[in-house]
Image (tube, rainbow, N blue to C red; front, side, top):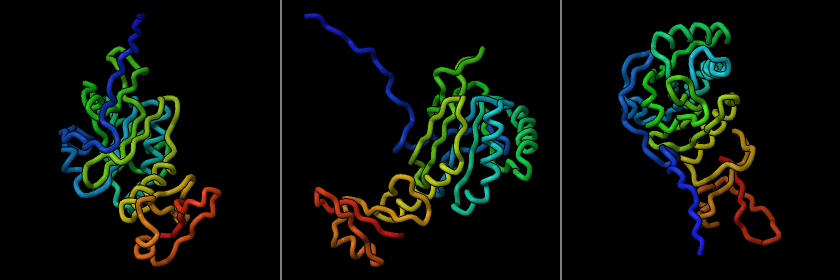
Length: 228
């Protein structure tokens, strides 16, 4: 019998449901410990392939432009790039000049040895320079319990949509308060769906404002809409 072995794949690193490691890191605003920084609030931790690069410059400016929206939601921002702190500080001048009115008031981690990106699962396996692998265009949304609630991973060629980041923060925060989920293309103000593990009797108590059940061919009453 011919035996065939499938190639072994590496287990994924830090991902949804994992607690972020309590690393001490150097940032543009001094040394911080991640658990202390993220304590009891929501945090967006996002990495970039490098300083003085085009897509990253537009992204950091756009995130800075949206800072007041994140502040309303009590969300902290924490960037990361593999260059040193002096490079970060000079780069910030370009970021703010390109996005007038935007101030980079959030800290940016320095990771010149590229050790932090490995521990935070922010390595791009395809992007390398003479020093090794570069950071991916990764973004983790960390909950008040210091666990990752959502992750985005983009190639270096594709910039992130900050409106989408804000939308998923709204979804995650709403789902943390109610037994609901948000349907496709949901945005603030749209109806949400009631979690399937909530019975109709329970739903009447949980959602006194009422709910509507979709009339489906299966006649199964699992698609229930409400507003919260």
